[in-house]
Length: 113
Length: 122
Image 1 (tube, helix red, strand yellow):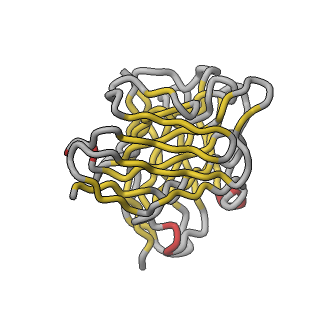
Image 2 (cartoon, rainbow over the protein chains, first blue to last red):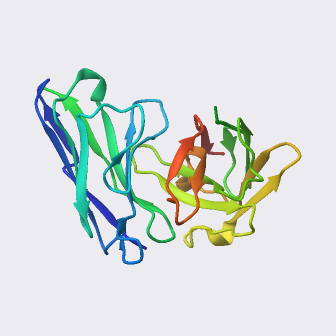
């Protein structure tokens, strides 16, 4: 199985400041045939299911504002919230879909300072 | 708009079998463009993928659960079901049904049900 490791476990950021979350996979999720990174990010608010935020490592799902930026390739990925808003308080998960079984990171909790 | 809704018992006794059903509206589980699956999330933990199926016949399961899991389909009702046998306290979790794309279009879960809390206790 591909192990997904996120850091930090939690993050406290002031409103309007930048929040950065890291995700590392135990093996590359870059597929050589299409040069795509098979990595997604999810946002989960309390009492709700995870919501798809990013796919193909950097493509933002419709409905999410452009302050959510994601990058990375191979084994190292980053999700950045460029200007944290109150509604961004949530747990964020990375997930690989390069190989079965699909696996998720342990999550990063983002809170307001 | 696609909607998925889980249904089933909230409480299961140790050693018993869990049965959950997902009812899909706004889309057909007979589509070969998608996989339909189950994911669970224990309190305070990251999600764990259980398994999925495609109407084309592929049914991948998580090897860690494969010996206890069955996913079945009822196309007449546009539903699919999860059976998980020999339940223990470690299986206590919120169980979600999801839709996934196929491998080349992206096998990530893009739609989730609201979840069904299952507690294993005598």
